[in-house]
Length: 82
Image (cartoon, rainbow, N blue to C red):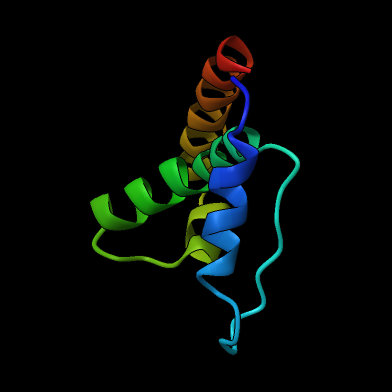
């Protein structure tokens, strides 16, 4: 999937003049998959476990393994999409 360069430029212009640092991406689609690779396992597990932080997930062997497996699935899906 290819990005619409004008759409990306339009989105970047929305942040002009604000205090948030924003930079473009060579591939918004790939960047979304990269973000999902983190958000899906850790947000899901953190919520399912009552709001625990990421460091607790990583320190717990079973939760860490679940997070790793979810990441692998996200990567497989991303590779089919990209």
